[in-house]
Length: 216
Image: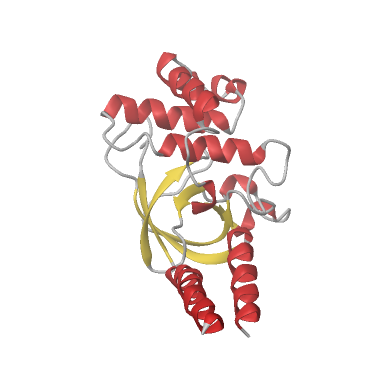
């Protein structure tokens, strides 16, 4: 019986990170820091009524508060087919680099916040897209620094990227819906669900008891 419970818990824990779920999103605030043209976050959203800090990874779409939409939530290390990058080669790396850079916002000055956000935006579009749209100011030494930092350190930073989710408008892959009208894409942190953590730790706690019973 115990083995069956342990197997069921292991399957549940293994399956959880790859799940894609739909969420009701509400845009609360773009933050207070701007680069002179746009707010650079971090932003505040609610996901199914729970307030979350969000990081924008999509420069070429917009949303203004208050706004409600439905989004897919995909784990960075799981199935990315509903995201803007989809399952393209290198998609996981780009989202992981962006997740790494979000850890640099804490304690950053306003200028550093701007540079970090510009670097994140540059991860998801070629520089030509920014210069061609009149936004070449994002490409400078500041964002270059953070891009290089991400490229060099994201794999060795010790970050559990399965705790990050990509929030993507459900209409983004609908060919009948003008993509330029869909909402920006975001990264949020998604700590391990308490119920799953309790299942795992609870079963681990039972193991010594089972062993003692077998010895007696």
